Image (tube, rainbow over all chains, first blue to last red):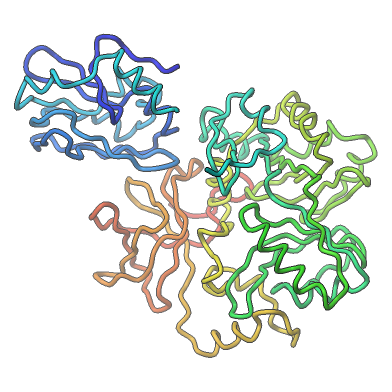
Length: 131
Length: 364
């Protein structure tokens, strides 16, 4: 069973979202996602200052097996991207919820947060996907 | 719904923590945790692969050499010493590749072949059709298992779990040759660019060998590492780098086609016509100079002109760069770029292999 921290929000496409409480969020991919992808070897980060609508492709993570899009779970403007990942994409495998965060977004609409899954709902989603 | 076939080692893979994936109709381990760790284990120490899904085919009869001389694009006349192996393509009359395979010369009435898993059915059907004129028996040996043990320490570790008699024979093997004690068959061959053995044995002894090798310090490796290892070694993968629509001459396999003598093998006339007509595409090796990952089917460009595509590519754990094999127009220059998600990134053309015996073979 993969690690699913209770304080985070989640999407069906396996992104996690941490509400920073100041109108911004931090976004990454879940432990379940990194495990399914295998060793990560490349991350294409979004540019700081670029804007995304909810559901739009924001980043790409590539493992030894495949390339996978990271969708922006919320609408907003990128305020920071995790440059560590350019040299050390494996950080996502090692610490998906801490040092392996991918980017931070200044939200266009804070209410969109209410549409995300909590940890329990996400755990159930992962379980259903495996069947 | 189709159910993937399982090798005799399926339960052991799960017990050892493998992540299983469907591969060519088989349920196979892709890794046991980290594909990159498995890759490095083979380059620096010893790793093992379940290759039971591949098929051993025994060819028997008085005219078996004559049969293979017609069937294969490489020339079995090169096999003079018993135990010696040859890599060859088996072609259609139009020159397309039915499969690539290894054939071992055991005696004048017995040659042993190892063919790919996904092509087994059509290979057997094709060989049986051709063999009837030569009174040769084509016998797929579904009763046998096979484990590949690869890496600089693979031979020593594998010999430790063999009978003393077989270990002694295995120790004497030259590269690309095999020995058998009647039960086990040991070839000094592989698909990684490292030294090692491929061991063929009765299916009911296969699990014990896998466990004994694990105890001897041989790391279980999945298909993921097998693919990056063979790619670094510059070895083709059937279905990606060539198939029935591709000539070996456009897949970097010209060296395996023995045309010098007048031998009349299946596909020869087509290959000769292709050579005469000219305009053949080149099969090349490239390295991505910057960051990103090369993948099969990405398009290659010479300036603004699209000249071909990657046939297999990936991240090389040894070189820590992306590498690939590609097929491009014969007149394409060496100044190539690749389109990755709409961006053209420069490539460096290099000579295969990328890595051999643990050492990088190219300048980065």
